[in-house]
Length: 351
Image (tube, rainbow, N blue to C red; front, side):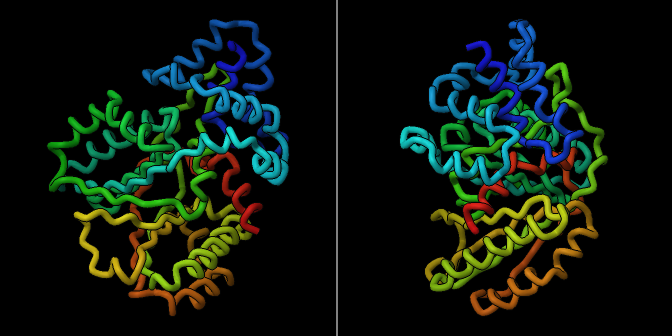
């Protein structure tokens, strides 16, 4: 069990596998020095430092989860295609562990004079939230005084437990007086990557050789982010999703690494939401992140992006809208936009 403990600590939140020989030492230190270490104290220290107050019984309560962690270590440096084939042949018991991913976007509006403090508190909360076992992503973006939190959890239980965590309670208490109006939330279901893909990934952490998370200087990243909202006639949704997934795949594979994320979500409207077009249209959100502004400009000019616009324009119930964010509050490290090659695996399956 002790070796599984160390493998979980080192792999489940550091799932980005190296693409170059020089990256291997830092990316898979767990499988070289860490797993071979005979020091149980070192392994325990790693678990403690990387998970903080997370309930330890949830880490090891499911034997299938342990099998997946071990499998990840053994297959860590295989090609994305090989891993996809292996995952597609998983046992039926393993498939039963797939949870309904909960995607929530939270809109927070800070007072004019509280932006800096809101940024600090939100970044701290996000940094702690990605340490939760069943968190897939926790991004924070800002446009003027509006903060948008992109929270993705693996199942309703994980989302509920997030709200009981000390860091969430502290954030909730500390920012209440900073907001100009009550925060609002929007719920979505995943389109691309799929629900199954989101179940396999976490936000990767930068870990040093001692098992400690590397703190990245604020403002060191160059990434830019935007959210595009598209309303589509219901009769065209299937075709729209197919065309949009193809565009997302092309963006990831054909732009020389300039597209860091291209996630597609479908809005879930509650009874309280105002949606006059709910009976005839569906709302989608594209969460796009690029290496820098030049990469974003290049993306807009690509042939696959132009083709997407031409094909989906007749499907839109109204003109699309978007928000170009001024700041990526979190993650501060651009390598943390990765998701353990999950997109490449999804790309293989989609093709």
